Amino acid sequence: MVGASLALALASTRLQVVVIEAVAAGSAAQPSFDERSTALGNGARQILQTLGVWGPLAGALAPIREIHISDAGRFGFARLDAAEHGLTALGYTVPNRQLGAALWQALASAPRIEVCSPARVLAMQPGAQRAQLTLLGDSGQTRVLQARLVVAADGAHSLIKQVAGIESSERDYQQVALVANLATDRVARGIAFERFTSSGPLALLPLADGSYTVVWTLTPEAAQRMAVADDEQFRRTLQASFGWRAGQIIRVGTRARYPLSLVSAQRLRAERVALIGNAAQSLHPVAAQGFNLGLRDAAMLAEFIATAEDPGAEDLLARFAQHRAADRRGMIGFTDRLVTLFSSRRGAAIAARDLGLLLFDLSPSAKQALSRLSWGFGGTLPRLSRGLSLSS
Ligand SMILES: Cc1cc2nc3c(=O)[nH]c(=O)nc-3n(C[C@H](O)[C@H](O)[C@H](O)COP(=O)(O)OP(=O)(O)OC[C@H]3O[C@@H](n4cnc5c(N)ncnc54)[C@H](O)[C@@H]3O)c2cc1C
Image 1 (cartoon, rainbow, N blue to C red):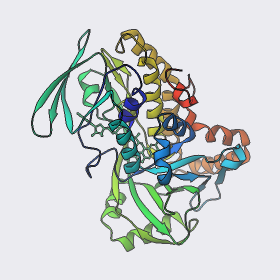
Image 2: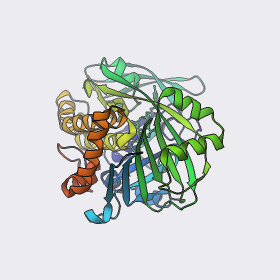
Image 3: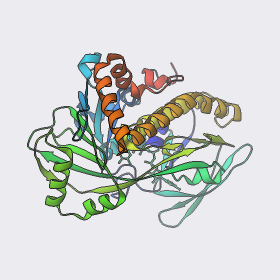
């Protein structure tokens, strides 16, 4: 999703861009455009609007007008309301498949972008003037490409990152996100729920058809049990954990599991290489910020290279990394602290989060700050996030 977004941002520049994607966009096996749904903040909306993919997504977007945050079995509760902050919505949920289709369709009609898919990057050789990539196509044919800049948008376990010698720190949360769609006996009307249960955070996000998508963080063992449970058993356990705030769960869809860890690259650049999206940092989904952050990586990189004489020049990549540092650091720290606080079963942590939710609910400035989360955590805001094109 992040690599396709970067390519689109560069569509109107004079750069020659090749997108290399191992799994075709329409394939059921696509690991990015899969069964999940993504919550997009207003910052992401602005970028996607400027890239021209927001309009085609209209029918697939569900506005999130309120967020209800609660601690299961405790008194902690907070409510965030878009109207109180002068916003139409706090964010929007979109199925990844539809977001993928819109991005891919836009790429297909961009004359200066070549989409090379399905094709897998097998190897990369960095060089002072150009990097060389070796690709393997679906039918076994190889192709060699030379580029002044290789952008690694190939996910948390990026091959490019490894070959470029960029190390990552990795912390396994020992948690698995179980994702499924579900319907309740009340139509979802713009309310997202984040509930902290004894097994971990559980989020219900509204979808455009009036149903919900659930992201349920569980221990690996519990996730395994829920993945193989029959629909009725899963429905009952989920209802008991989440409660009745969204009504009675009447139908559940296919379940998918995502083991969760924080993977953070130690640098965002190497010779002729820049990292964006999950290749740069892969976050816990508790605050639904991974793609939002990755999109700002893409927007900022596009801004730096759009008119550059040499898009892979060392000083340019150094400035890109510097401009992304504050937002990255802030978002990684924020997400990681949330996971620690809201996954803990220690009495002191539970009391602290109840008090935190209470204070948060009473604090307009804290709510204002949270409602603006998707604009980033500091540093310069990319032009595309401000609704400006790269050239104007
Ligand atoms: C359960 C869950 C829920 C989430 N919900 C949200 C949310 O609500 N909001 C939000 O902002 N974020 C969310 N995220 C995070 C978000 O999904 C990621 O940040 C986002 O997918 C990152 O996209 P990406 O394009 O950087 O990487 P990926 O999605 O990992 O895509 C990498 C791509 O690179 C391709 N690739 C890999 N290796 C090669 C190779 N050698 N050659 C060619 N191609 C290759 C892969 O096929 C893939 O298409 C969630 C994550 C999870 C796990």
